[in-house]
Image 1 (tube, rainbow, N blue to C red):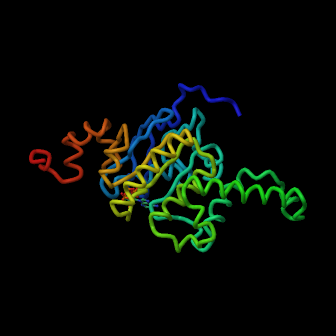
Image 2: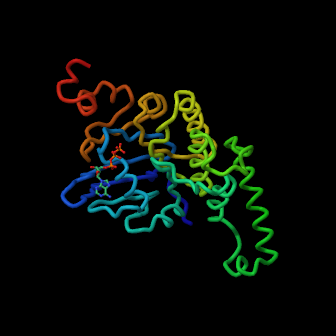
Image 3: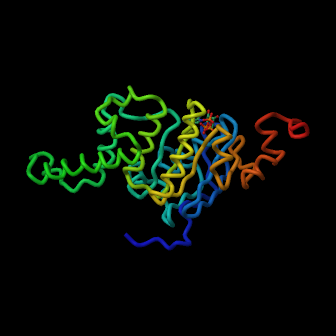
Length: 265
Ligand SMILES: Nc1ncnc2c1ncn2[C@@H]1O[C@H](COP(=O)(O)OP(=O)(O)OP(=O)(O)O)[C@@H](O)[C@H]1O
């Protein structure tokens, strides 16, 4: 693979739009994220945030616009091809293999990098067994980074909620992404779990040299950890800036609290 020029943005989205029937879910969305940045995407319910994520990760085909990841267009690629290029994501509603063990949830993601062929797998030969053993060991090491190794045999759906979120993040990272998209990672978490999640996001950013874009309604998390924030309302960007700039932006206050609120906020 050709090395990426460090000045090339990790993500460059231009003129992105998605129209569902008569509904403009996202209109003329532009966003540039440089390597190592931690960026928030916020906005009221139905603003188009998840639709934007779904276009970036290949689940939705854009009506218009371009999406470049490390300088290469990903428009028209399948989700698994985009994952392989280096974009990982988690979902608003946790999407684990809920009846598989914690170990197997992450092992499946590691399979992406397994070094055996289909023939090895079918014949279950020595190469297959060696790789399977190595895969299990690597997965166990990986789980320990997330303090999930003590749950390795547990069925995913039996984990406490906060640990399921942690597992979903671990699974996304097992595919070795450069860019991680987190869709409402704090949804349903209690304040203690949110604090642990903030620590985890800081930790994985350093440990895995990640660039992170996150959607979140939990303002404590967004304002504490994001360096830059983009605000969507009715599919359009209404503000960009630092957490302080965003908190003091009358358009943002109005979008969240309704017309006239900016005067009293
Ligand atoms: N597959 C779809 N078909 C039709 N309309 C859709 C589809 N997906 C999303 N929408 C609509 O597009 C708009 C934006 O939805 P989206 O889920 O992107 O918003 P959001 O900002 O992520 O909201 P939330 O914060 O509530 O998750 C909404 O009006 C939604 O109903």
